[in-house]
Image (tube, rainbow, N blue to C red; front, side, top):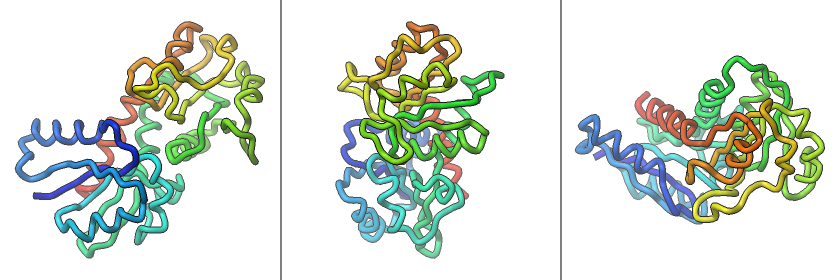
Length: 245
């Protein structure tokens, strides 16, 4: 049986395992393919998984390993090179481990759906992990100015207090932090939500719960909102295409 899986730490829940298990069952492929979860604290253990499991042909990668796996791979696809982070690994027939990024594809497709025909000029990206890098790449490639926001000031990053001064001049706010994720559902990015209005798109990469506090605040202000579920589905579909290619 051909194996696929997910690495990350911690892994309190797994969209990917549920998605692929249901897909294999629905398509009658459960006797050919399986998907497992590998909670590994150190990214270096990724190569051990492949070395000890000859049937393992691909992995999804989540927090905190999307950047840490980069030097552990044999090569990077152009998608991973562009983003600077990996969330899909494929083992080739000659036993090479190639890194890809499907977050770019997933966010781009999901954003187009919620964007409609409106023109986006400026965006705030909250957080600076591997997913944030994919979001930033998509926005830059589509001509959107990006302002990065973090809890701590740094080169090229605004604090949340500083970001409040830019809210009325932005069109899109993307939460790439884990704030609001179950079970910490009462947490949210510390923004001045009174400055958000109907002109904004409030996009949360969190999908559990479906309606985070961040999204609730956006809805209360009349903003267009989107959670991370559609992006997850699209990036998973792209992962499957990569593994099957």
